[in-house]
Amino acid sequence: MAKEITGYLKLQVRGGAANPSPPVGPALGAKGLNIMEFCKQFNGRTQEKQGQLLPVVVTIYSDKSFDFVIKTPPAPVLIMEAAKLKKGSAEPNRLKVGSISWDQVKAIAETKMQDLNAFKIEAAMRQVAGTARSMGVKISGKAPWAN
Image 1 (spheres, rainbow, N blue to C red):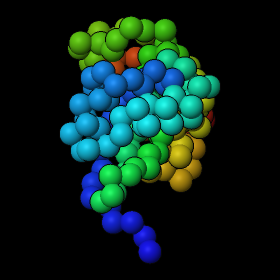
Image 2: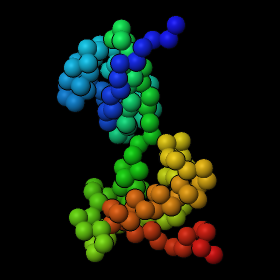
Image 3: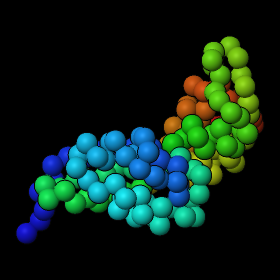
């Protein structure tokens, strides 16, 4: 018989760095989950993604057990890494703070593909490009589909 799901919890945690301090501890403790067990499992599964910000969806069951799914890093984080920026523009329509190439956009789209609602890489690239534009990051070159 399947366990009864009582809720979901969404967190953003750095890979390999989950610990009982805020924000992880209070969020899990409020739901009655074993905080140290989550930290051990999460850190074990994210050793190779050390330091990256990773969204996690925790499924909470009625017997206080849990499962969790680790998603890909958010697109803005990947864009800032590619453009070597600390943060996006305060006025993205006027002030451009960085630049990335279409090859970098494609690499980010391929990384994010499993978490996006796009079937083709071109559609995923358009989504990533839109995120970059809204951050004030310019995309240099010509779009691959605009020949």
